[in-house]
Amino acid sequence: MKNNKMNKCLAVLAFVFLMCGQANAQFSTTFAKNASPGQQAGFYYSLPQTVLQLDFLIEESELVEGPFSNYASRYLGSADMVEFDGKEYKIVDVTMHCNADPDPNATFFVALGSGRGSAKVDFDILPNGIIRSVSLGNAVDDGYQPAPAPTVEKPGAPEPKRASSQFINMAASGKSTDQLAKEAADKIEEIRKAKFNLLSGFYEVAYDKETLDDMFQRLDEMEAEYVSLFSGKRITKQVVKSVYVIPVKDIPTMTVAKFSESEGLTIGTSGIGSPITVQALPLNNLGTVNAPSQSAIESMTYESKVIYRVPDMANVKVMMGRNVLLEKRVGVNQLGQMLMAPVTNTRLIFNTETGQITNLRMY
Image (tube, rainbow, N blue to C red; front, side):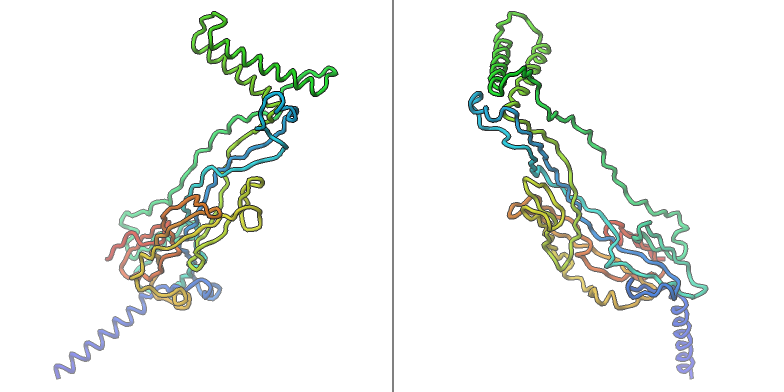
């Protein structure tokens, strides 16, 4: 008799716990494309994906042919000159930064249940939809305030003073081009002689160092202007052009741009020049994690659970043809694994840059 009563009590308790569990199932999480938001109340949240920002520092040169370029060999004995007007480009440096954007392949719909009398669940989501924390019960009332997402402001570099593409004006007064070229060559010789005399002390004046440097610099600038009449001008500036790349698990190597010395950097694959490729090879640090497949995540509904992600590290290599421009090891969220975390008397805090759980408190 006592055993029968004990079994009945256990059955009643099991039924009560089962009913309480059903009542506490306040929400369910479904992959976004399987949701029916028009038929049930709820909201969306996303995990962050890693976007690689490649900043190419490019030297851009404007080439201007000199008016006396045909006389360069005769008067200057130099063949180093600009032969025609145009532009030249050269990659000086490449840097990489990792940004976090909402991942469309890791976006979920949280359908709100109708259970009553259960603990309150608080979701904290960034304005862009990335989940930041999930708290249960009094988790938000204990003084915790999620830290705002970090913002990085890049100081703007001052615009460098550009050289003029205009050449020094020589009075023609009916003279032929050959005569003007000869006068320009003679002027160059005069300036070079003045520079020599200034440095050798020919003028017998005790100039202080600052004055001497200033006079020599002025002569240098004047000589360069006359020389440019023969050699032409190469007006150079540096610009930064950014290319954004989203690594994909099934495509380890992607062509993201093309570069040529005559056209510069062209984003995409339609330009001319050498292809610029990005290779992101995961290190498989999570090989021992028994995680569900992407198809399983997309097809199932999870009661009172949220999906989070453990990112993987990857070796990222940026190449132009066979030349390695940059190689760096970084964390790439979408190459990692998605897992489920139960929300039962638990507070979860996520890293909004990776989607990983960074803090867990159980009540």
